[in-house]
Image 1 (cartoon, one colour):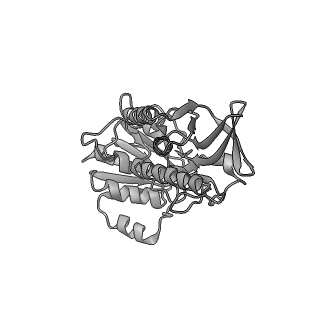
Image 2 (cartoon, one colour; image 1 turned 90 degrees about the horizontal axis):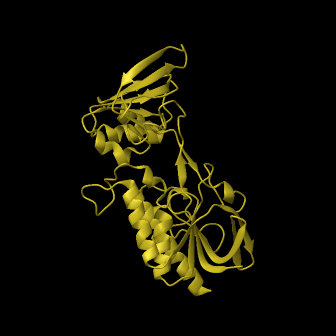
Image 3 (cartoon, rainbow, N blue to C red; image 1 turned 30 degrees about the vertical axis):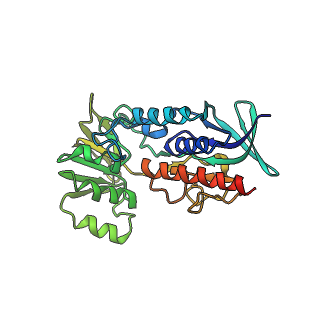
Amino acid sequence: MKEYEVVIIGGGPAGLTAGLYAARFGLKTILLERGLFGGQIVNANEVHNYPGFPNGVSGMDLGQLMYDQTVKFGLQAETAEVTGIKSNGNSFEIIFDEETISTKTVIIATGSNYRKMGVDGEAKLNGRGVSYCATCDGFLFKNKDVAVIGGGDTAVTDALELSQHCKTVYVIHRRDQLRACEAVQRAAFSNERIKFIWNSVVDSLEGQEKLDNVFIKDVKTGGTSSLSVSGVFVAIGLIPNSDLFKGFLDLDKAGNIVSNEMMHTSVPGIFTAGDIRKNSARQVATAVGDGATAAKAAFSYLKER
């Protein structure tokens, strides 16, 4: 059985940064990613809020640059899906692709997936008017009409943020009242740029090269209508990629991994970073910071032992 000092699960910005730091610390490290290196950021047409790129950078290019830098410093990175993790005394066994390896520490950076609406046109127009991150993409819709889907804190906060750039922000919510906290609601109701469409859900999205129309269904009457907007921001929740760790690590009610400020989880020797972590800001910049912190914490843990 191959032995490592660090195994990193997940190859998004958090995992790649952890790999970069672990490799530079001289630790024998392997990173396992089941999909594309770079994580969800590769789906972004342009990233404008990551330092060092004043003119923006495509998510695919940013992910590739991060990957190239990590392997340059000697990180072993493989495409593989982890299917099991076991504690074995002072080490851990990681199972993937019918192979088992042993490691002294683990950094979990498996991230989360945006909850999709599951309507016609959503996948086709992803990145061409459909977005799941107002902070990432709101700037692209300056002086345009957009819609936010959802009624919780994230959706209403997104609407407030978008109102700073956009002409009109429509909030489409399936109920007749918001779930957001009272302070956020007050701010939204007093904002002249934010309009509410109650008791409604998105039925489908229309557009060829870009989003043109949103078709809306009234959940009470069953009637449909259309709304012409340039962008739709879906804010109906996140699904943490944490099923593998249920019963093994402490998770919050939403399924995020509970950790302290140094990325230590409830199990000594296991650390976490990025979107999978409870209270993550879910931004590339914070994921990178988490990854560096997790690698440093793993190094200290190994040194102390």
